[in-house]
Amino acid sequence: MGMRLVKNGLGALAALAMTWAIMGAGMASETTTLGVPVPWGTGLQASGGPIKTAIHDFNEMVFWIIVAITIFVGVLLAWVMFRYSAKRNPVASQTSHHTGLEIAWTVIPVLILIVIAIPSFRLIYYQDRTQEADMTINVQGRQWYWNYAYPDHGGFNFDSRPIPTEDLKPGQLRNLAVDEPLVVPAGRNIRVISTGVDVIHSFFVPSLGVQRYSIPGRSIETWFRADSPGSYFGQCNQICGTNHWFMPIEVRAIPAAEFDAWVASARTRFAATMPASATPAVAAVAEAPISLAAIAAPLAR
Image (cartoon, rainbow, N blue to C red; front, side, top):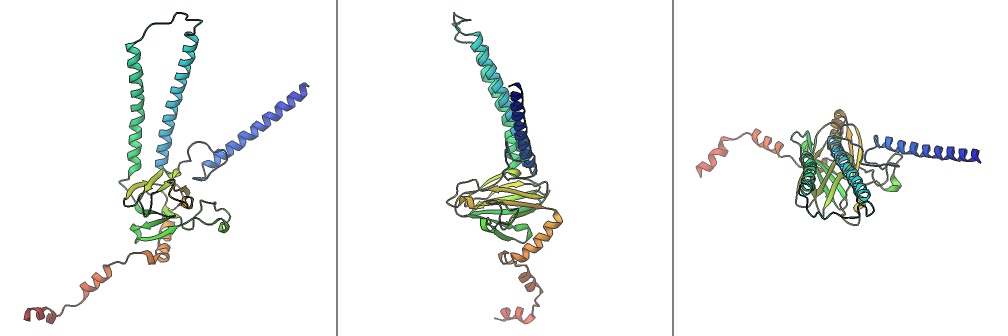
């Protein structure tokens, strides 16, 4: 009987160890996969840039404040239940006001809110825009796909749509992989100007700390930086219609040299979307010879 209990206990410990190993593997993979669901994943997505790191820091600070408050309230309730039970305190106190206590339960919550508010406002302004953008991307939400434009590189633009399940290749993620990802240089500050064409959409890439509505008639600015090369996935998180799910986002960060080569290729592939430049026509007019007869003709009339 004793040996059976020992075996059962060892089996339970082995199963528990295996469970924790699976959880650990899932959490470890979360540090290398950005924006992709992982088994046993908990908490926020791993950080891919400075904005998400700031969000992590703020979230951790608020979490420990909540933990401290919860422990304090729990201990206080337990002490009150023990100390002031009817058995230990048969004659209840008739005290109805306590100036010190009322000041404390007013001032302390205000101080806690101030401690939370200051870094919260700082984070909001930090997310809002960057003063040192290396390039700008225009993001348009459309029913139901994204359009990305590169005004700093000739103004070419392209649509980004999810790859159908039947066309997925090995390694591509269902409902996340797209035919034309948003390509940016790694380690550069990217200004994003977001707008909508038809209804309200939302440009949301959690691992980069980006979430901005795409509203028709409005241009809303934000920014991000992908510190390392890789793919960062997100989705429209605004319920924008029947094909809302059809708007995944894939941001592909590549080294600067590769990005320059990609831009050269994209300018060729999407040449039809580039606005016509007036510079050649102006140059042609400036270089055209001006005849004296052409000047004198109006004067003669």
